[in-house]
Image (cartoon, one colour):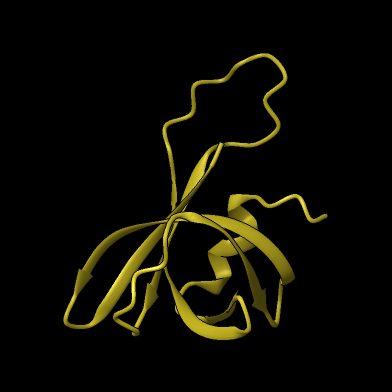
Amino acid sequence: MTFLQFESFGPLVHEAFRVRVGDAVLEMTLAMVQRLTNRPYPGQVRVPFRLRFHCARQVILPQGSYGFENADLGKLDIFIVPLARDRDGVIYEAIFN
């Protein structure tokens, strides 16, 4: 299992990720990587951050863990939540803390 950090995603903004949804595969683009306010606590292992993905498909996936794949990061599971849908597609968010 890969330990994901802000630095893992920073260089990948605007890159494509393949997302497995059952037997289907969707493509999402990493639209944003943002550090979150850090309130250190004992045992903290990373600074919190958020990812925002854009999917051009209009179908909204329910929140949950999905298999993502990227040429640089390989395969990983990410829990995403749909944030908004407009004529350009759907925005999803993942929070790492």
